Image 1: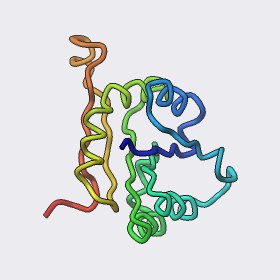
Image 2 (image 1 turned 90 degrees about the vertical axis):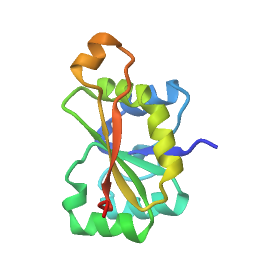
Image 3 (image 1 turned 180 degrees about the vertical axis):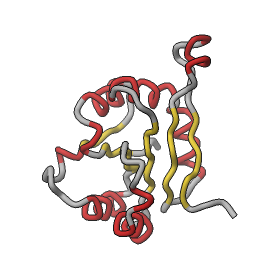
Length: 141
């Protein structure tokens, strides 16, 4: 069974559309919450629904109230890393989806993982090259 991915409002409209077009199950922030809904509120709801959240907010791990919401509500959170357009980030996510799905299947929430785009060298060799995913929180001991 494939997970349902929830895209944070900071990823816009094109990011979730590209993921859906690739066959992933995606729910958008705008379809469920007000634009000014505090992150800890929607994180709680995403945890209750057992969806996997995707954000571009790399600072979320350092915001005590948001990190507490991830832990308290057992949220699986993926942080898309990189300075690129949202369509480029979405295409990289799609190219990495096998690794992402494997990671999600092997890790029980709560967690925060970083999803990286492939390197420019990898893209030159193979435009559909996958990126990588790594656990960010909780820290490995």
